Image (cartoon, rainbow, N blue to C red; front, side, top):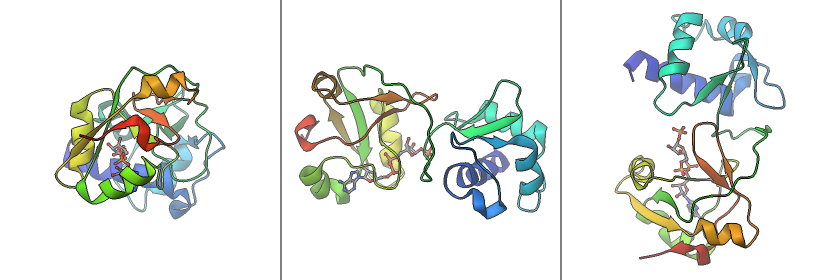
Length: 180
Ligand code: HQG
């Protein structure tokens, strides 16, 4: 991602996932913001942000973090919110195994309590080990945990998939994690 894009993408994540109040932006119950309202209210913080640049960021974002509605009049973050909104996910059957990237300092707690959603709405898991490695690397030397998602599903635990392919569930109890 271009540096300016990355900077604005971080700003959009903050506004659309965590703190719309920072620019007095209104999000509806499904997390959607009005595009023209966003552009005018973001102006003071991001003078270069116009519709053309916003479209470029939505299209080229490395993790497809944002999405427009069909008419491109509304925009929302695809996942990662800490504010209470309903993304209307449908439960789906996960693959047999999913991966989670973390770091050593969390391992004692994870062995004891399993994976918790912390400040997000769900625990985030990925289909590819490589993605989990990247996620863990944000915090240091990554440790990749294998989650027996197929077994969880068989036992009645729900999984969801976000528009950008992240697997989501409420909690992963320690008995479903392969600690090697
Ligand atoms: C850890 C980024 C202590 C967990 C990424 C993680 C991802 C525990 C941290 C997305 C724990 C939470 C999500 C427990 C889990 N005790 N620590 N019981 N259970 N943890 O950021 O999965 O750039 O909320 O291992 O690419 O790291 O935002 O979750 O280290 O897709 O789009 O607590 O965020 O995407 O951290 O990352 P996070 P995550 P975006």
